[in-house]
Image (cartoon, rainbow, N blue to C red; front, side, top):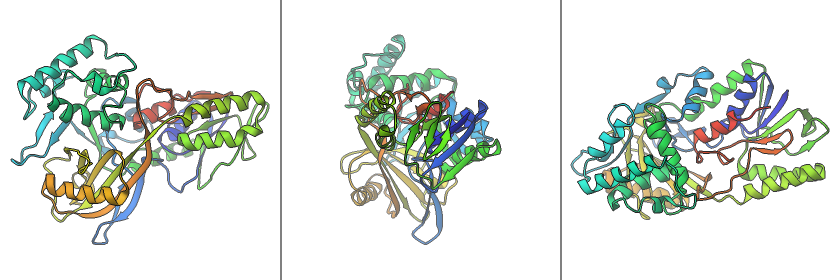
Length: 429
C-alpha cells in the first residue's frame, strides 16, 4: 500500500517505521523544516555567543517506556549510549548541600521502591508509613480506581510532605496536569508500569543528546533506506476520499495517517469534509468534535547559563510555587551539553515567556544560590492535553482508510513520548 503520513513528530515517524516494517510505502509530509514535532532540536546561542543545540522542551524517558526503547533500537540507535540511566530520584536542593527527598537504589523491582521510601531523607516515619499503606492498597487493587477520581482525591490519606515532594512532582511531570485536576486512573497506570511493569521501569532516562538525534533523525534515515520519503516544508491542504483511495492535495494514496496536533487534525478534517461523501463527512465531523473538546496545558523550558555552574546531580526537583514555578532543573553540562547550562521545566505553565523567565531566574537565586544569565525560554502553549478524569479522547480510526495517531489519541498513556510512539506503532493496514 501507498500510505501518506501527515506530520513528522514522534507519533508520525513511529507510524512510518511501523507501516514500512509491514511492507508498505510511506510518504511523510511535514509542514516545518525540521522533524520531531513537539520534541525536536533547537539552535541557539549562549550569552557569550557560543552556538548551542537546545530542545524545544526538556524531555525525559523512564525505563517503562519499552516501546520507545525498542523502536530506538529498531532504527539503529543504542539507548544506553544516548540516555543516562539513573534510579528514580525526586530530590530537592538543601542548605546542607545534601539533597533531600526520595531516591531509589539500583535494586530489583519493586524492592527499589520499598528501599527508596524507607530511606527517604527528611521524611518522618509517619510520611513513609502513609505512602507504604497507600502503595500496598493500590497494588492490592491492581492499580485500578474509580475513573472519576482525581490524583489529589486518590492521595488524601498521604501526608502533606509526601504529596508535596512525591505525588505532585510525579503527577505534573507524567500527566502535565495538577494533581487536583489530574486523572487518578491514568496516574495509577503509569505507576503500575514504572514500579511493576519491567525491571528498571522506574529508572529515569535522561537524554545525553538533542531530541532530534534521540529518535526522529534516525527514523527518517531508516524509512528512506527502505524506499520511503520525507517531504519537509510541505503543508497538506486537503484530503479527498475516492472509491478506494484518498487524494492528498490531488496525489492518490491507499491510506492516510493524520499525525499532527489535535488542533491541526481537526482543522484538516473540517476543511476536507465538504469534499467527502455524506457518510465519511459525518465521521470526520464526529471525530473533530471529540478532538476539539480537549483542553491543553503549556510547558515552558527556561534555559539559563552561569560560569562554572554544576548541580549536585544531573536532575533536581524544585519547590514550586506561584512565584517560583519551575518543578525541575536539569544540568545540561552533565548530559553532554556545554558546562554551566541549566534547563528549568515549568509544567502546566500559565504565565507569559518574559514573566516565567524572570521568575525562574529568581527561583535559581533563592533555591540554588545561583546567579544565572538567560539563554532562551521556550513555551509550548499546547504541549499536552489536560489529562483529567473520565476524559473522552478521539479514537484512532476516523473513516475507512483514514487513521489518526498522536499522544492525544485514545490510549492507556498520558501525553508522553511513549504515548505518541505507541499510537504510531498501532497504525496497521
